[in-house]
Image 1: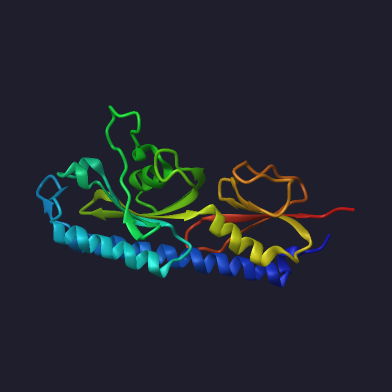
Image 2: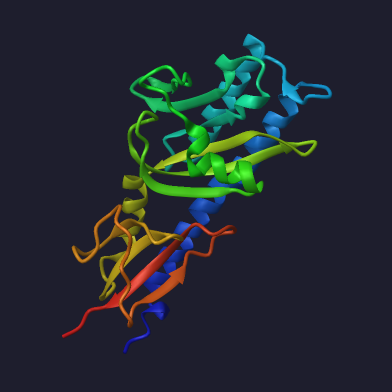
Length: 241
């Protein structure tokens, strides 16, 4: 059996993916810290005071700068813990690439609405909220959110032991697929890029389908994408016959 993990093109794919995702994460950490500097918390409850119009403009600028630095992303901003916000209409500070540049994107956070987007149950929010750790979530279809097939990377912000919310960014799966296919065309193997939970993000064979869970065979090799926090794996299956 050939040791495909030593293939230079595969190693390059691992490096490119790790560098791209780690840069996104590093800037999410910075984004969270920038938000920290703009917060005013009521004491002792630790609730976030409403932002002024000038501050909202500054928050937009932070997201615009983030999106400009990371063309792989399609949306970025901050989602606050609803229990910490005084102004409920400011819970989601989110901007996306639109037809006329960077645009605000709103979500319906009203339990009485049929369009209610309960983000608190989604892993990109619930895992950082419960663990205090970053989360690379997906792939998934963000129904009632941006309605795309995406992965989401989130970095929690915790102030005085209180969970304030997450700095977060969406990455369309199609853009990860582009990176994947740029590097696998000449590798003599069936390959699937998956989440750490095994859900397929990109694949070069009909033996796997994007969005499905990868079913492993005994001879498959699984290698991690060497990101700072766990994000993705590569499943490598030698072509037989």
